Amino acid sequence: MAQRVAGSDGGSKKTSRVRVAVRLRPYMCGQDDPSEQPCVRGLDSQNLEIINWRNAMETVKYHFDVFHGEQTTQQEVFLTSVKPILPHILNGQNASVFAYGPTGAGKTHTMLGTGEQPGVIPRAVREVFNLVRAKDKAQDDGWNYSVGMSYMEIYNEKVLDLLSPNSPDLPIREDKDKNILIPGLTHTTLSSFSDFEKLFVPATLNRTTASTKLNQRSSRSHAILLIKVVRTQRSLPHRQQTGKLYLVDLAGSEDNRRTGNQGIRLKESGAINLSLFTLSKVVDALNSGTAVRVPYRDSKLTRLLQDSLGGSAHSVMITNIAPEYKYYFDTFSALNFAAKSKLIVNKPFTRETVAVPVLPVKRSREEHEAAGSGT
Ligand code: ADP
Ligand code: MG
Figure 1 (cartoon, rainbow, N blue to C red):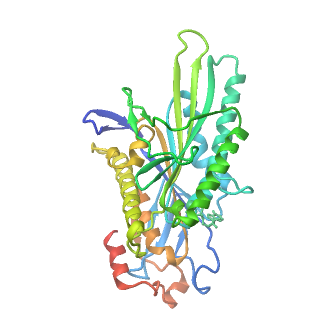
Figure 2: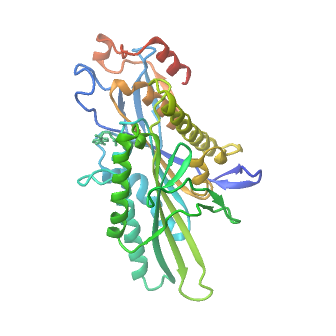
Figure 3: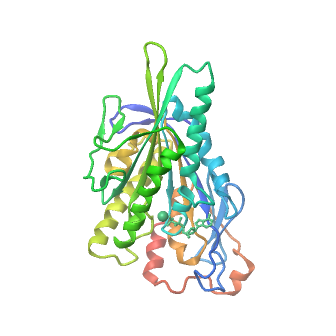
């Protein structure tokens, strides 16, 4: 799937597509009127349909690289969308996995998960250690491997070190080989998965505890875990290669203009929208297959991910969506961002939807128009 695309520096460089998966979480009873039905449903492993609010007799059908239905387990998401890219980071290549979607749709469940249902992050870190151990055991592999981590947050276009409380806004730099670096960011070597847990768990708890005090900060910031694998040749000339894996729980993609944010929160929304808006432009540019400028430099998030998103990197975006009507417009806009193609199908969503009112009646007319104009 490699394509030739003009780089942001005007030169021509090889870029690869971002694979797009969509995960629909289960319907959560009690969220809406109990008589309501889900407004979106899966069709097969690549397609889903959502009711068309403009015409209840129609559905809109979307096509993706992968569709994970509400029955999909954490293990299946990991095996299908993440595990295949991990061997590359032991060969000095970069990769990124990010969870996109509105707040409440399952990004943190997908990336972090729970003790009983661990998500992409713990599974990927365990797998990196398994891969490194397998290499260490293989006699013919002439390299020594070392694994390390950094953990940061982008909040209001500031890069903050989550392993060093009260860190200042950190700069993002590029070296002569076009590697992206963050001078001053804590980077800790790990010798096992339990080393990782000891650092990651308290840092994540701190972040989510602070969030309830600071206006749901965790839904307004991007949490970025970096796992770095450095390998060094055992014999002369002791060549070194670095592979980076970014695991990102993005800020909520909901349209904050609609929720009536004011003051500081409006400023935050603007900054979040800048990073997410730029990310959508970068992904569109990478996936368009035409020679367009990729606007990495337009936001902190995309600048940080520049060497690990597109180019020779392996990237997966997991778009999380929720089936309840209250998410309808945010689901619609997330799908329009993620879809490879869409098609309006002239048939009712379910037999019931013909008989009962299907529009979310609590929404105002302007909201319908705002959502409609963006499609
Ligand atoms: P987000 O991070 O996008 O705001 P969360 O991951 O916090 O969303 O999910 C919102 C709620 O839905 C949580 O209670 C979470 O446990 C639940 N949830 C999300 N995805 C799933 C899933 N696939 N299966 C079961 N519960 C889920
Ligand atoms: Mg979350």
